[in-house]
Image (cartoon, rainbow, N blue to C red):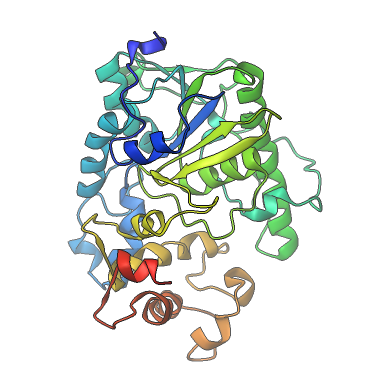
Length: 361
């Protein structure tokens, strides 16, 4: 019997038969990663896009320490997703949204999670695997603010020795060289995650669970698999990926967003799930644009309310810059994704993208 007295029933409620058929239940170390439930910060761009006056926003909009109504439903379903996993160890980001995504599961199973600052959200992309990154010269690991576990959660979360402080990534602007420095810092952080996993669990048949964020979750997956993840969508809120250790010590991706991979790539269902923010089986233009337009704030490095060509860093800049002022407003930025939706996803022009349309891509 494993730790926490959990019984192996199925891998996930949403995909158990698929995953068991994939032969993932017998081999070595398995690492599961769950992204937090939908927070208010995840939907702010959608409310802006729909031009709802800010004084009419619910309290959760823009708040990264509150779940949306959908996020609360997702949170309530997490325990059911995870109960089928025979988990030996759990680690979580320091963020409220990551801790509270798994907290009901911890309470229900009388389990405890270790807080890892290195699992907190960070900026990174496929460049994190590049051989052409500089070596950071300023302290990163443990150089940030002290980590505090609220007294009300102390029964379920413990600080890791050596993880008493957040990491710190200095702001470096938005030039190509700055992007290299950002990814270089991210590699230091995520390499620490990989090292800790390998030090504790490599070569065992353990099953571990990590609870974290979107960008950092893909960074961990990239560093474990050494793959750029071309064609992989965003990790959906409470979406789960899984990798399995191989005989040579490497890690093979098995699942993404709760669906088994197909020839090593996310299935159409996995990609559709990442875009279907309300879980009704359809992706509207508002859902698609709102989700993607949420990246505006992250790209707006100088916080001037517009994106320069360097900040946008995409070939769509010229067409999107309708007034030719060399900047993209939030509306112009959203238009990039409106066009993408119309041309690439809504095949029949009815305003929604179904799973069948996604399969036809």
